[in-house]
Structure formats: structure tokens, C-alpha cells
Length: 232
Image (cartoon, rainbow, N blue to C red; front, side):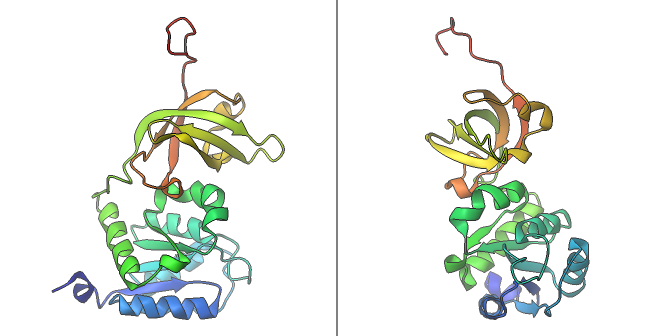
């Protein structure tokens, strides 16, 4: 018996503010062996209200990231998936705006988003695998690409106008590729002394294959390198 056959009684909530995309996702979810649960068109002011409906009617979720444009919700899909993670609900996040959103509005919650799919890659097989991988993580079986370790992070650029983003290098992941992240991930007492070339410690999933999959947490200030030790 395949994993799809063993899961065919599980209901998966479809959260999307676009009716047509919601129906397309529901079809893929059904093809994956699950029973789709489509929400009616209402506005959700409170994330807990939507979580309650999902918990009452489904055992998991597939969620679009941008939910606010048509007035469906005043929070993002990333925030919703992260909240469902705390409830031990396996959820997959989908976005059509990978290049624009992953570095900021999604990365803010990425620690609690085990599976992120681009809209074009969201099909029956990838959704089934996503639900499986998320379920495994929620049960403590974390993929190597999702395990974090304490590592050096070097600040490359700070957006002085908006104070919202920071570009960093993670040498243990890729010393030649900068990664953008929300400044809000960094504690206030560290953010107040940030400057270019400063070094931090952070817990990062350095086994990630793509920068889109990186998450950052537990920032600490690192000692400045000693110019006389040959390592500066």
C-alpha cells in the first residue's frame, strides 16, 4: 500500500484568496489522495479564528502566502502556517512570488515552515511529499536540510532607510552568496549596534540547498577578529 493510499481519509484545508487557484489546488490535493476542504469566502480578522476552523474540519493545510489582496485575511499565509506548526498541524506553503517574498515576509516565519513550494511546482506529488515531510518534522524526524547549527553570520549591508532588511553572508553555507533577511529577526539589543562587516552567531540550517530555504534564529554578537592572530 502506498503512502497516498494510506492517507486518503485525511482532510486537507485549502487556504487561498483566489477561488480559481483554490479549486486548482484542491484538485491536486485530491489527486494526492487526500480529501480537500475548501473554506467559504469570508474575511478573517483573527488568525486564531481561521485556525479553529481548520482544526475542526481538517488534519492539515495547503496555504497560499498572499491572503490579503482580496480581503480574505489581514495576515499572511506564512504566519498562518507557522501558527499551525505550533499546533502540530502539517501544512504546506505555496507562493507565486518566490523571488519577492522569500527574503522578507516568508523568511520571518521560515523556522516554522518546513515546506515551501512555488505555485508552478505545487502538484499532487510535491504536496503529498510536503505533507509527509512536515508531519515527520512535527514528530521529531528533521531532514538534514532543516537542521540548524550555530554558525558565523557576517553582516554585508543594512538598509538604513527602511531599517527592515539586512543582507548577510553565511560562510558555512555559501561564502559567495548574500542572503537577505528581516531585521526584526535580530534582537533589539544587537540590532542597535549592527554595522557592516560585523560578525554574529546564529542558528542556521546550513544544509539547505537554496537560499529560499534558509532560516535564522538565536542571534548572538560574535567577538571581533584579532588583527594580530592572522585570521582577520
